[in-house]
Image 1 (cartoon, rainbow, N blue to C red):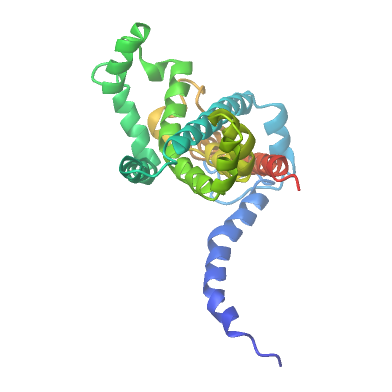
Image 2: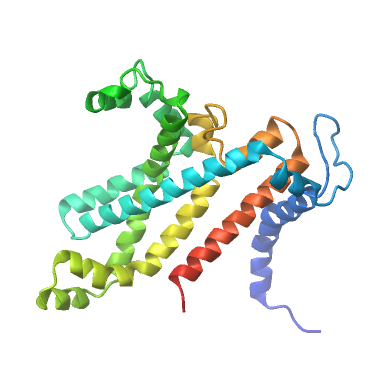
Length: 289
């Protein structure tokens, strides 16, 4: 009888924990998505309905279509602006100095804050009566004076996107700074000696070598944006109406407001499929080889 290596016994507790906490719920929810289970009517899963939950989701649920549209707007603007802000901040902080070191330390603070706390904070900041951010914005843009951000569909979406950018841009800045630090300085210096401007050095030398890091940042931020829930729940609660109800919030709302667990499981796997498609697209785009 072959002896089991010691490392297998050492890894077994961690593997069992992962299987119990991640793999089992994943497989159980997949099975649940093919069944009917309305928690208000029964405390056990109901009959097998096959692909009916998925068919109704994709063909006859206007609320899902609204959630997909809100998700597209949120993810598109959130990912693009976050990566752009992080790239600009990383380029500004690339040269070491006392100020840049202090700024890098400050960049950690927004990321370590709870997303739920960020949502509550922005809700206070945008209060039309005593919100400091609302007051400052009304000085710059008089048309916003007295506007209730969370009662307007576009302003509410803007608030949700801004809060998520504030949360994730510092972390992505640190990731891009790591990528910039790995680029050989000789290539940039050689381009400068040849007479290239700062923009040409960035476009022709720095950016091509930074593309793998930016690809990882895009994938990570897209995944984080697609499953964003805490900030939306505490800031706008999916409103007004369903204007900020993303697909992740739709899954929560279906499961814990309508108590339709089978239907919510199908919606959750629709979100999982969307995450996998986005990851595959970005990886093929960035890592062509």
